[in-house]
Image (cartoon, rainbow, N blue to C red; front, side, top):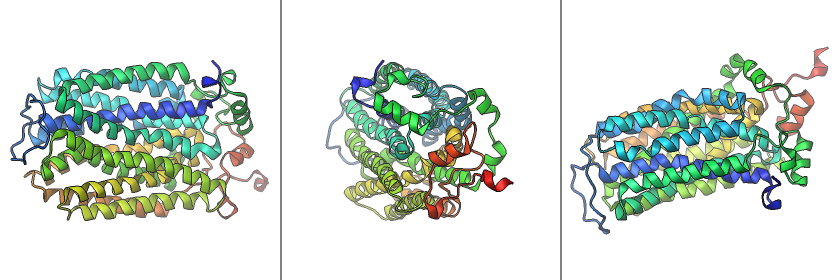
Length: 479
Protein backbone atom coordinates (compact mmCIF):
# COMPACT_ATOMS: atom_id res chain seq x y z
CA UNK A 1 0.00 0.00 0.00
CA UNK A 2 1.54 3.38 -0.92
CA UNK A 3 1.83 6.27 1.45
CA UNK A 4 -1.62 7.12 2.77
CA UNK A 5 -3.49 9.22 0.22
CA UNK A 6 -0.19 9.48 -1.70
CA UNK A 7 0.87 12.57 0.25
CA UNK A 8 0.59 12.08 4.02
CA UNK A 9 3.83 10.74 5.57
CA UNK A 10 3.22 7.35 7.13
CA UNK A 11 4.74 8.38 10.48
CA UNK A 12 2.02 11.03 10.80
CA UNK A 13 -0.62 8.39 10.11
CA UNK A 14 0.91 6.31 12.92
CA UNK A 15 0.80 9.36 15.21
CA UNK A 16 -2.85 10.17 14.47
CA UNK A 17 -4.01 6.57 14.87
CA UNK A 18 -1.95 6.21 18.05
CA UNK A 19 -3.62 9.36 19.36
CA UNK A 20 -7.08 7.97 18.59
CA UNK A 21 -6.32 4.59 20.17
CA UNK A 22 -5.13 6.18 23.40
CA UNK A 23 -8.06 8.60 23.28
CA UNK A 24 -10.52 5.70 23.31
CA UNK A 25 -8.71 3.43 25.78
CA UNK A 26 -7.88 6.12 28.33
CA UNK A 27 -11.42 7.43 28.07
CA UNK A 28 -12.76 4.17 29.49
CA UNK A 29 -11.74 5.12 33.03
CA UNK A 30 -13.61 8.39 32.80
CA UNK A 31 -16.71 6.69 31.40
CA UNK A 32 -16.80 4.53 34.51
CA UNK A 33 -16.01 7.41 36.87
CA UNK A 34 -18.82 9.64 35.58
CA UNK A 35 -21.25 6.71 35.42
CA UNK A 36 -20.54 5.69 39.00
CA UNK A 37 -21.08 9.29 40.11
CA UNK A 38 -24.49 9.32 38.43
CA UNK A 39 -25.90 5.93 39.51
CA UNK A 40 -24.45 5.25 42.96
CA UNK A 41 -26.95 6.25 45.64
CA UNK A 42 -25.99 9.37 47.61
CA UNK A 43 -26.68 10.00 51.26
CA UNK A 44 -26.20 13.73 50.98
CA UNK A 45 -28.68 16.37 49.94
CA UNK A 46 -27.81 18.37 46.88
CA UNK A 47 -29.01 21.58 45.23
CA UNK A 48 -31.77 21.40 42.67
CA UNK A 49 -30.33 20.37 39.33
CA UNK A 50 -30.52 22.84 36.47
CA UNK A 51 -31.01 20.04 33.93
CA UNK A 52 -33.47 17.19 34.51
CA UNK A 53 -32.03 13.80 33.60
CA UNK A 54 -33.81 10.51 33.05
CA UNK A 55 -34.08 8.37 36.17
CA UNK A 56 -31.48 5.65 36.69
CA UNK A 57 -31.39 2.46 38.66
CA UNK A 58 -29.42 3.34 41.80
CA UNK A 59 -26.63 1.07 43.00
CA UNK A 60 -26.26 0.71 46.76
CA UNK A 61 -22.47 0.85 46.68
CA UNK A 62 -20.59 2.25 49.67
CA UNK A 63 -17.63 4.61 49.44
CA UNK A 64 -15.38 1.60 50.06
CA UNK A 65 -17.05 -0.33 47.22
CA UNK A 66 -16.40 2.55 44.83
CA UNK A 67 -12.80 2.69 46.05
CA UNK A 68 -12.34 -1.00 45.24
CA UNK A 69 -13.77 -0.53 41.74
CA UNK A 70 -11.37 2.34 41.03
CA UNK A 71 -8.31 0.76 42.66
CA UNK A 72 -8.80 -2.64 40.99
CA UNK A 73 -7.60 -1.20 37.70
CA UNK A 74 -4.32 -0.16 39.31
CA UNK A 75 -3.62 -3.66 40.62
CA UNK A 76 -3.72 -5.04 37.10
CA UNK A 77 -2.06 -2.03 35.49
CA UNK A 78 1.03 -2.16 37.68
CA UNK A 79 1.74 -5.82 36.96
CA UNK A 80 2.13 -5.59 33.18
CA UNK A 81 4.17 -2.39 32.81
CA UNK A 82 7.63 -3.95 32.57
CA UNK A 83 6.37 -7.16 30.89
CA UNK A 84 4.63 -4.88 28.39
CA UNK A 85 7.91 -3.15 27.62
CA UNK A 86 9.61 -6.52 27.16
CA UNK A 87 6.82 -7.73 24.86
CA UNK A 88 7.18 -4.59 22.75
CA UNK A 89 10.92 -5.27 22.45
CA UNK A 90 10.49 -8.99 21.69
CA UNK A 91 7.58 -8.72 19.23
CA UNK A 92 6.36 -6.08 16.77
CA UNK A 93 5.30 -3.22 19.04
CA UNK A 94 2.40 -2.20 16.79
CA UNK A 95 0.81 -5.64 17.25
CA UNK A 96 1.29 -5.59 21.01
CA UNK A 97 -0.28 -2.12 21.10
CA UNK A 98 -3.35 -3.15 19.10
CA UNK A 99 -3.77 -6.50 20.84
CA UNK A 100 -3.87 -4.88 24.28
CA UNK A 101 -6.51 -2.45 23.04
CA UNK A 102 -8.65 -5.24 21.61
CA UNK A 103 -8.71 -7.11 24.92
CA UNK A 104 -9.62 -4.07 27.00
CA UNK A 105 -12.41 -3.01 24.61
CA UNK A 106 -13.95 -6.49 24.75
CA UNK A 107 -13.85 -6.52 28.55
CA UNK A 108 -15.40 -3.06 28.75
CA UNK A 109 -18.48 -4.25 26.88
CA UNK A 110 -19.24 -6.66 29.75
CA UNK A 111 -19.51 -4.01 32.47
CA UNK A 112 -23.15 -2.88 31.86
CA UNK A 113 -24.34 -6.46 32.34
CA UNK A 114 -22.25 -7.11 35.46
CA UNK A 115 -22.53 -3.76 37.26
CA UNK A 116 -26.11 -4.23 38.59
CA UNK A 117 -25.31 -7.75 39.83
CA UNK A 118 -22.49 -7.01 42.27
CA UNK A 119 -19.60 -4.58 42.47
CA UNK A 120 -17.21 -7.54 42.81
CA UNK A 121 -17.77 -8.50 39.18
CA UNK A 122 -16.77 -5.01 38.10
CA UNK A 123 -13.67 -5.24 40.29
CA UNK A 124 -12.66 -8.44 38.48
CA UNK A 125 -13.19 -6.85 35.06
CA UNK A 126 -11.18 -3.79 36.09
CA UNK A 127 -8.24 -5.94 37.18
CA UNK A 128 -8.25 -7.69 33.80
CA UNK A 129 -8.53 -4.36 32.00
CA UNK A 130 -5.59 -3.04 33.98
CA UNK A 131 -3.52 -6.06 32.95
CA UNK A 132 -4.29 -5.37 29.29
CA UNK A 133 -3.89 -1.59 29.40
CA UNK A 134 -0.61 -1.80 31.27
CA UNK A 135 0.98 -2.88 28.00
CA UNK A 136 -0.29 0.07 25.95
CA UNK A 137 1.98 3.02 26.80
CA UNK A 138 5.25 1.01 26.89
CA UNK A 139 4.42 -0.47 23.47
CA UNK A 140 3.72 3.04 22.15
CA UNK A 141 7.29 3.97 23.07
CA UNK A 142 8.44 0.85 21.24
CA UNK A 143 6.60 2.06 18.14
CA UNK A 144 8.32 5.45 18.24
CA UNK A 145 11.73 3.88 18.78
CA UNK A 146 11.51 2.77 15.13
CA UNK A 147 9.15 5.36 13.65
CA UNK A 148 10.39 8.72 14.97
CA UNK A 149 13.22 10.68 13.29
CA UNK A 150 15.51 12.35 15.83
CA UNK A 151 14.28 15.91 15.21
CA UNK A 152 10.62 14.87 15.46
CA UNK A 153 10.59 12.35 18.29
CA UNK A 154 9.23 14.76 20.90
CA UNK A 155 6.36 16.10 18.82
CA UNK A 156 5.39 12.67 17.45
CA UNK A 157 5.62 10.80 20.76
CA UNK A 158 3.88 13.52 22.73
CA UNK A 159 1.17 14.12 20.13
CA UNK A 160 0.20 10.45 20.20
CA UNK A 161 0.42 10.36 24.00
CA UNK A 162 -1.79 13.44 24.22
CA UNK A 163 -4.61 11.10 23.25
CA UNK A 164 -4.38 9.81 26.82
CA UNK A 165 -5.45 13.29 27.97
CA UNK A 166 -7.97 14.01 25.24
CA UNK A 167 -9.64 10.66 25.93
CA UNK A 168 -10.88 11.51 29.43
CA UNK A 169 -12.10 14.91 28.19
CA UNK A 170 -14.21 13.45 25.40
CA UNK A 171 -15.38 10.59 27.63
CA UNK A 172 -16.51 12.85 30.47
CA UNK A 173 -18.40 15.12 28.10
CA UNK A 174 -20.08 12.29 26.17
CA UNK A 175 -20.80 10.19 29.24
CA UNK A 176 -22.51 13.06 31.02
CA UNK A 177 -24.77 13.73 28.03
CA UNK A 178 -25.54 10.08 27.20
CA UNK A 179 -26.15 9.11 30.83
CA UNK A 180 -28.44 12.06 31.38
CA UNK A 181 -30.53 11.83 28.22
CA UNK A 182 -30.24 8.25 26.90
CA UNK A 183 -29.16 5.81 29.58
CA UNK A 184 -25.92 4.89 31.29
CA UNK A 185 -25.50 1.46 29.63
CA UNK A 186 -25.24 2.82 26.08
CA UNK A 187 -21.96 4.71 26.54
CA UNK A 188 -20.17 1.43 27.34
CA UNK A 189 -21.34 -0.14 24.08
CA UNK A 190 -20.48 3.00 22.11
CA UNK A 191 -16.90 2.97 23.36
CA UNK A 192 -16.43 -0.76 22.87
CA UNK A 193 -17.74 -0.51 19.30
CA UNK A 194 -15.54 2.48 18.48
CA UNK A 195 -12.55 0.63 19.91
CA UNK A 196 -13.18 -2.44 17.78
CA UNK A 197 -13.38 -0.29 14.64
CA UNK A 198 -10.13 1.45 15.58
CA UNK A 199 -8.30 -1.90 15.87
CA UNK A 200 -9.30 -2.80 12.31
CA UNK A 201 -8.13 0.57 10.93
CA UNK A 202 -4.84 0.29 12.84
CA UNK A 203 -3.94 -3.06 11.30
CA UNK A 204 -4.80 -1.77 7.81
CA UNK A 205 -2.60 1.33 7.92
CA UNK A 206 0.20 0.62 10.43
CA UNK A 207 3.07 -1.81 9.97
CA UNK A 208 6.10 -2.80 12.02
CA UNK A 209 8.74 -0.30 10.89
CA UNK A 210 9.67 1.86 7.89
CA UNK A 211 12.58 -0.48 7.12
CA UNK A 212 10.40 -3.58 6.95
CA UNK A 213 8.10 -2.17 4.25
CA UNK A 214 9.89 0.75 2.54
CA UNK A 215 7.68 0.36 -0.56
CA UNK A 216 4.72 1.55 1.53
CA UNK A 217 6.39 4.90 2.20
CA UNK A 218 6.55 7.99 0.05
CA UNK A 219 9.90 8.65 -1.61
CA UNK A 220 10.78 11.62 0.62
CA UNK A 221 9.92 9.75 3.81
CA UNK A 222 11.79 6.63 2.69
CA UNK A 223 14.95 8.68 2.08
CA UNK A 224 14.57 10.32 5.51
CA UNK A 225 14.50 6.98 7.32
CA UNK A 226 17.36 5.61 5.23
CA UNK A 227 19.44 8.67 6.08
CA UNK A 228 18.78 8.54 9.82
CA UNK A 229 18.79 4.73 9.96
CA UNK A 230 16.07 4.85 12.63
CA UNK A 231 14.81 1.45 13.67
CA UNK A 232 17.39 -0.44 11.62
CA UNK A 233 19.26 -2.03 14.52
CA UNK A 234 21.02 -5.29 13.81
CA UNK A 235 20.21 -8.52 15.60
CA UNK A 236 16.92 -10.20 16.30
CA UNK A 237 14.27 -9.08 18.75
CA UNK A 238 14.93 -12.20 20.83
CA UNK A 239 18.63 -11.28 21.04
CA UNK A 240 17.65 -7.79 22.15
CA UNK A 241 15.50 -9.18 24.96
CA UNK A 242 18.25 -11.56 26.07
CA UNK A 243 20.74 -8.69 26.18
CA UNK A 244 18.66 -6.27 28.25
CA UNK A 245 21.16 -4.66 30.66
CA UNK A 246 18.94 -4.96 33.74
CA UNK A 247 21.65 -4.11 36.25
CA UNK A 248 22.61 -0.93 34.40
CA UNK A 249 18.99 0.08 33.93
CA UNK A 250 17.98 -0.49 37.54
CA UNK A 251 21.04 1.32 38.92
CA UNK A 252 20.77 4.32 36.59
CA UNK A 253 19.83 7.57 38.43
CA UNK A 254 18.38 8.93 35.17
CA UNK A 255 16.00 5.97 34.89
CA UNK A 256 14.87 6.40 38.49
CA UNK A 257 14.28 10.10 37.86
CA UNK A 258 11.87 9.16 35.07
CA UNK A 259 10.24 6.62 37.40
CA UNK A 260 9.66 9.25 40.09
CA UNK A 261 8.23 11.70 37.55
CA UNK A 262 5.92 8.99 36.26
CA UNK A 263 4.83 8.11 39.79
CA UNK A 264 3.86 11.66 40.73
CA UNK A 265 2.14 12.23 37.40
CA UNK A 266 0.16 8.99 37.70
CA UNK A 267 -1.11 10.07 41.13
CA UNK A 268 -2.33 13.43 39.83
CA UNK A 269 -3.82 11.95 36.66
CA UNK A 270 -5.74 9.35 38.65
CA UNK A 271 -6.99 12.05 41.01
CA UNK A 272 -8.40 14.12 38.16
CA UNK A 273 -9.65 11.16 36.11
CA UNK A 274 -11.38 9.22 38.89
CA UNK A 275 -12.31 11.87 41.44
CA UNK A 276 -12.88 15.20 39.70
CA UNK A 277 -16.54 14.29 38.96
CA UNK A 278 -17.04 13.22 42.58
CA UNK A 279 -15.36 16.40 43.90
CA UNK A 280 -17.62 18.58 41.77
CA UNK A 281 -20.65 16.55 42.83
CA UNK A 282 -19.84 16.64 46.57
CA UNK A 283 -18.85 20.30 46.59
CA UNK A 284 -21.22 22.00 44.15
CA UNK A 285 -23.93 19.41 43.32
CA UNK A 286 -24.81 19.79 39.66
CA UNK A 287 -26.53 17.62 37.05
CA UNK A 288 -24.40 14.83 35.66
CA UNK A 289 -24.14 16.35 32.17
CA UNK A 290 -22.81 19.61 33.63
CA UNK A 291 -20.36 17.68 35.81
CA UNK A 292 -19.21 15.87 32.67
CA UNK A 293 -18.60 19.20 30.92
CA UNK A 294 -16.69 20.71 33.84
CA UNK A 295 -14.60 17.55 34.25
CA UNK A 296 -13.75 17.48 30.54
CA UNK A 297 -12.35 21.01 30.26
CA UNK A 298 -9.03 20.40 32.10
CA UNK A 299 -8.27 17.44 29.84
CA UNK A 300 -8.90 19.44 26.68
CA UNK A 301 -6.39 22.00 27.95
CA UNK A 302 -3.85 19.26 28.69
CA UNK A 303 -4.26 17.79 25.21
CA UNK A 304 -3.21 21.11 23.71
CA UNK A 305 -0.31 21.84 26.06
CA UNK A 306 1.19 18.34 25.69
CA UNK A 307 1.41 18.72 21.91
CA UNK A 308 2.59 22.33 22.10
CA UNK A 309 5.23 21.36 24.67
CA UNK A 310 6.56 18.61 22.41
CA UNK A 311 6.79 21.02 19.49
CA UNK A 312 8.58 23.60 21.66
CA UNK A 313 11.15 21.08 22.90
CA UNK A 314 11.88 19.87 19.36
CA UNK A 315 12.31 23.48 18.18
CA UNK A 316 14.58 24.39 21.10
CA UNK A 317 16.78 21.33 20.59
CA UNK A 318 16.91 21.70 16.81
CA UNK A 319 18.10 25.31 17.18
CA UNK A 320 20.49 24.24 19.98
CA UNK A 321 19.25 26.97 22.32
CA UNK A 322 19.83 24.91 25.47
CA UNK A 323 21.20 21.40 26.19
CA UNK A 324 18.82 18.46 26.05
CA UNK A 325 19.20 17.64 29.75
CA UNK A 326 18.39 21.21 30.77
CA UNK A 327 15.37 21.25 28.46
CA UNK A 328 13.98 18.08 30.05
CA UNK A 329 14.49 19.40 33.58
CA UNK A 330 13.15 22.86 32.78
CA UNK A 331 9.88 21.69 31.24
CA UNK A 332 9.29 18.92 33.77
CA UNK A 333 10.10 20.82 36.94
CA UNK A 334 8.45 24.12 36.04
CA UNK A 335 5.30 22.36 34.87
CA UNK A 336 4.91 20.14 37.92
CA UNK A 337 5.86 22.89 40.39
CA UNK A 338 3.20 25.19 38.92
CA UNK A 339 0.63 22.39 39.05
CA UNK A 340 1.45 21.64 42.70
CA UNK A 341 1.09 25.32 43.63
CA UNK A 342 -2.36 25.42 42.07
CA UNK A 343 -3.42 22.25 43.89
CA UNK A 344 -2.44 23.88 47.19
CA UNK A 345 -4.64 26.85 46.31
CA UNK A 346 -7.49 24.48 45.43
CA UNK A 347 -7.84 23.62 49.10
CA UNK A 348 -9.19 27.12 49.77
CA UNK A 349 -11.53 27.50 46.78
CA UNK A 350 -15.26 27.89 47.40
CA UNK A 351 -16.29 29.09 43.94
CA UNK A 352 -17.43 26.59 41.32
CA UNK A 353 -16.14 28.66 38.39
CA UNK A 354 -12.79 29.34 40.05
CA UNK A 355 -12.37 25.64 40.85
CA UNK A 356 -12.85 24.67 37.19
CA UNK A 357 -10.48 27.43 36.02
CA UNK A 358 -7.77 26.34 38.46
CA UNK A 359 -8.15 22.70 37.44
CA UNK A 360 -7.71 23.77 33.80
CA UNK A 361 -4.55 25.71 34.63
CA UNK A 362 -3.23 22.85 36.74
CA UNK A 363 -3.69 20.29 33.99
CA UNK A 364 -2.28 22.71 31.42
CA UNK A 365 0.99 22.98 33.33
CA UNK A 366 1.01 19.22 33.70
CA UNK A 367 0.90 18.95 29.92
CA UNK A 368 3.98 21.15 29.68
CA UNK A 369 5.73 18.90 32.20
CA UNK A 370 5.09 15.89 29.96
CA UNK A 371 7.59 17.36 27.50
CA UNK A 372 10.20 16.73 30.15
CA UNK A 373 9.81 13.15 31.26
CA UNK A 374 7.47 11.34 28.85
CA UNK A 375 9.86 11.44 25.88
CA UNK A 376 12.89 11.01 28.15
CA UNK A 377 13.16 7.20 27.64
CA UNK A 378 13.86 7.82 23.95
CA UNK A 379 16.83 9.99 24.99
CA UNK A 380 18.29 7.48 27.40
CA UNK A 381 18.00 4.29 25.32
CA UNK A 382 15.99 4.27 22.12
CA UNK A 383 16.29 0.48 21.70
CA UNK A 384 14.99 -0.11 25.24
CA UNK A 385 12.57 2.83 25.36
CA UNK A 386 9.54 0.57 25.78
CA UNK A 387 11.12 -1.08 28.82
CA UNK A 388 12.12 2.26 30.38
CA UNK A 389 8.60 3.56 29.87
CA UNK A 390 7.28 0.41 31.51
CA UNK A 391 9.50 1.10 34.51
CA UNK A 392 8.31 4.70 34.71
CA UNK A 393 4.68 3.59 34.51
CA UNK A 394 5.27 1.27 37.46
CA UNK A 395 4.61 4.45 39.37
CA UNK A 396 0.98 3.64 38.72
CA UNK A 397 1.18 1.87 42.08
CA UNK A 398 -0.48 5.07 43.23
CA UNK A 399 -3.57 3.72 41.54
CA UNK A 400 -3.76 1.08 44.26
CA UNK A 401 -3.11 3.46 47.15
CA UNK A 402 -5.03 6.55 46.07
CA UNK A 403 -8.64 5.23 46.26
CA UNK A 404 -8.09 4.05 49.83
CA UNK A 405 -6.49 7.35 50.79
CA UNK A 406 -9.22 9.42 49.15
CA UNK A 407 -11.97 7.28 50.70
CA UNK A 408 -10.54 7.88 54.18
CA UNK A 409 -9.88 11.58 53.66
CA UNK A 410 -13.37 12.21 52.24
CA UNK A 411 -15.38 9.78 54.36
CA UNK A 412 -17.87 12.43 55.44
CA UNK A 413 -18.25 13.60 51.80
CA UNK A 414 -17.88 17.18 53.08
CA UNK A 415 -16.40 19.72 50.63
CA UNK A 416 -13.63 20.69 53.07
CA UNK A 417 -12.32 17.12 53.09
CA UNK A 418 -11.02 17.58 49.56
CA UNK A 419 -8.48 20.17 50.70
CA UNK A 420 -6.46 17.43 52.38
CA UNK A 421 -6.52 15.36 49.18
CA UNK A 422 -5.15 18.30 47.17
CA UNK A 423 -2.44 19.10 49.70
CA UNK A 424 -1.18 15.52 49.93
CA UNK A 425 -1.04 15.37 46.14
CA UNK A 426 0.85 18.67 45.90
CA UNK A 427 3.41 17.51 48.47
CA UNK A 428 4.13 14.33 46.52
CA UNK A 429 4.45 16.31 43.31
CA UNK A 430 6.94 18.80 44.77
CA UNK A 431 9.05 15.93 46.09
CA UNK A 432 9.10 14.50 42.57
CA UNK A 433 10.24 17.85 41.17
CA UNK A 434 13.27 17.90 43.47
CA UNK A 435 14.32 14.35 42.59
CA UNK A 436 13.92 14.88 38.83
CA UNK A 437 15.92 18.12 38.99
CA UNK A 438 18.77 16.31 40.74
CA UNK A 439 19.05 13.11 38.70
CA UNK A 440 17.38 13.44 35.28
CA UNK A 441 19.45 13.29 32.10
CA UNK A 442 18.89 13.82 28.40
CA UNK A 443 22.02 11.92 27.39
CA UNK A 444 22.11 8.53 25.74
CA UNK A 445 23.35 6.00 28.26
CA UNK A 446 26.40 3.82 27.67
CA UNK A 447 24.39 0.61 28.10
CA UNK A 448 21.87 1.56 25.39
CA UNK A 449 23.80 0.51 22.29
CA UNK A 450 22.28 -2.83 21.32
CA UNK A 451 23.17 -3.55 17.69
CA UNK A 452 24.15 0.03 16.94
CA UNK A 453 27.57 1.29 16.00
CA UNK A 454 28.89 4.07 18.19
CA UNK A 455 29.02 6.49 15.32
CA UNK A 456 25.35 5.85 14.56
CA UNK A 457 24.52 6.41 18.22
CA UNK A 458 26.09 9.85 18.14
CA UNK A 459 24.10 10.77 15.03
CA UNK A 460 20.84 9.51 16.53
CA UNK A 461 21.10 11.51 19.78
CA UNK A 462 23.19 14.64 19.18
CA UNK A 463 23.85 16.87 22.18
CA UNK A 464 25.04 20.48 22.25
CA UNK A 465 28.70 21.00 22.99
CA UNK A 466 27.83 22.22 26.49
CA UNK A 467 26.05 18.95 27.19
CA UNK A 468 27.53 16.73 24.52
CA UNK A 469 29.18 13.96 26.44
CA UNK A 470 26.80 11.04 26.33
CA UNK A 471 27.59 8.18 28.63
CA UNK A 472 29.00 6.21 25.68
CA UNK A 473 32.70 5.30 25.80
CA UNK A 474 35.00 6.81 23.20
CA UNK A 475 36.62 3.98 21.21
CA UNK A 476 39.72 6.12 20.62
CA UNK A 477 40.24 6.46 24.35
CA UNK A 478 40.45 2.73 24.92
CA UNK A 479 43.99 2.30 23.64
